Amino acid sequence: MVTFPTVRPRRLRNNKIIRDLIAQTSINVSQLVLPIFVKENINEPEKIESMPEIFRYPPNDYLTKFVQQAYELGIRSFILFGIPSYKDDFASSAYAKDGIIQKSLGLLRQTFGDKILLIADECTDEYISHGHCGVVINKNGKAIIDNDESLEVHARIALSQAEAGADIIAPSSMMDGVVGAIRKKLDENGYRDISIMSYSVKYASTFYSPFRDAAYSKPAFGDRRGYQMDPRNSFEALKEAELDIEEGADILMVKPAHTYLDVIRIVKDNFPYYPLAAYHVSGEYSMIKAAAINGWIDERTAVLEITTAIKRAGADIIITYFAPKIAEWLKEGVPF
Ligand code: PBG
Image 1 (tube, rainbow, N blue to C red):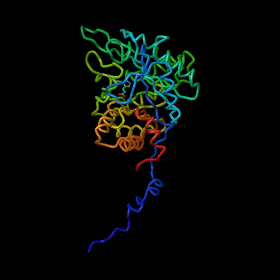
Image 2 (image 1 turned 90 degrees about the horizontal axis):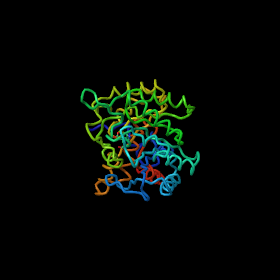
Image 3 (image 1 turned 180 degrees about the horizontal axis):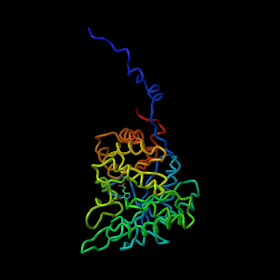
Image 4 (image 1 turned 90 degrees about the vertical axis):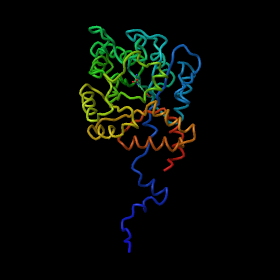
């Protein structure tokens, strides 16, 4: 004779209403951040081949209309990536007063006032001739990305982004001490209220490839393994997060997101009093898109499941190219 169970977890899965009643995790549109690529010297949005349905925008009506549409869906936070018309060895187009990021921040601030939150990705890679996240110097005939030489440049870029109207600076270079250098520079110049959302735990990931295609920021030599984290490590994430906290970071980030759910969890568990962002990156976006376009997965269900998983793992804020779609889909509820 078989014995029948007394405790039956299935009772609580009987129908959608009871599942919704006990659901632990939900996605809030207010916690989604939409990445936007802005590009100099174009008049119309430009398709990005490796990222279906994502465009590079010129800093004109096309950009404000795109933001307006997202706004109407409930999205309030945006992170901007600039694609300049020139690159040099000092990334000077990243801190030029009329640089692409400065122009775009200014336009959006002017159009939307305080109705939206503007985050500026702070890095050199899109603006510097060799595409690295810092300054390259020649040491004994070898090109190296010099940490300390890079700090002043990063601080200078951050200051110019704050001057142009950014609410939050998001340093993504993984240079040691960059958060402290930026905090000091902002404070010295009266920008004490500008927050820092640090890409504290950024892995050397192949899932940034479509982004590098979108932003023309593939390094001309070498790779980023000398400064971004090794995918084999997780406890090192705590060291990175702790250092950023000591240096004055307000918000921490783990990137990529879907591939690093365990890391999101340990960072959240160890620093629960710091808001944690997770970046669902370009390659993670394009993989889903490719499968969906082929009809192999249902895009809506897949994206909502993955985004929920990122939230469940411990992320408070989710940076995702799917933000407008998620906002739209959530109006009909979740498909679980
Ligand atoms: C650096 C930066 C990158 C991304 C965000 N900030 C590129 C890199 O480190 O190579 C990647 C984001 C994505 O893949 O969606 N400015």
